[in-house]
Image (tube, rainbow, N blue to C red; front, side, top):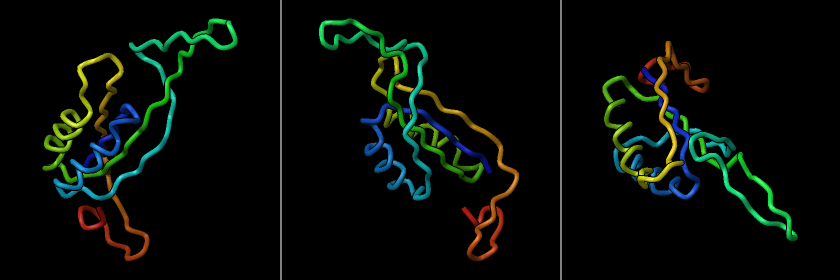
Length: 112
């Protein structure tokens, strides 16, 4: 099993959820986060004063999938979230040793 974690633009979340749902991935954890990278923030003016906003709002989506699904899920995320501009986000893939469903005690792939 692998954990696929991506940090994306907030406006792409619904499109990503729909694409993953069509593929059959229904379980995910979504968090609102802030961060910076190559996008480097933006300059805004408030009451005549210019200031830098270098931590931009993003959404972090965490999904645990079977090893066989990893490449397809990564492709779905890439296609759904790509605008071609700086700030589209990142995808991280990490190994998962085990998953246990608390309610039933199921483990491994059955618990996903």
